Length: 307
Image (cartoon, rainbow, N blue to C red; front, side, top):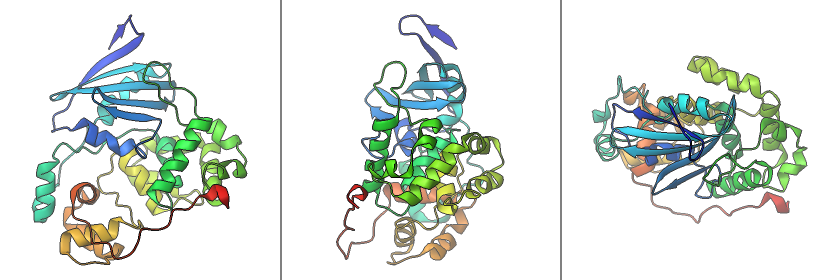
């Protein structure tokens, strides 16, 4: 680690042994194209995060098998320590058999640089996952952006990013304050509960995966879908499939069989040959697999602020 006097950044480099597409892999942390906490541009990836030691801004750029990382802010040193897991350097392909289905094998060939990343920041993954419960992606992404812009602090250093609202800020808001950002009381109460016990939430980052998901699901309003969304990006769980998702089951079943109307049971049966990498296979399908033809108009977008 070295200090750059010119811009007060800390810097390190991470070597990744597996193929890496940095932008593709870290896009898993972005909640919509207007997410103020992360930006993917021609220079690499900018990310704002709240580490235990304080807020930090990270800039990551790829040079072949190496990733150059710079970090600013009170949490900069801790952010650099987290960089290997963040860029997928600890991703493990043991037991991965993409040849179990020709489509998955082809998608893996085309996107071999997609790594399972581990951010290690549980609340940062859990809050947007709760916002995404039972609503369209457009609605959830708009709500997340409004919340971050209204309640988040400016991230340190360059990049012009915003930090996710602090646990103290989220926990102090009455439920109706979330309403103006597009989040109704049920989801607001889940977020407030997680924020109020953020220390216990963050402890899940270093727990074994089953216990970690159990810790999250002990919170009212956090079920298997939400814990799976967190597990994939927080600790790189390659087997955490989002059961109960409106899109994933039908898309996976259609991609692997050509059948429309697939449900979770059918999806899990089809993904069984890929375990313990069923989520890796599902991710590839969601990123590049065929979609079932649409037979009905898109769901009408709602604005909870008007209710």
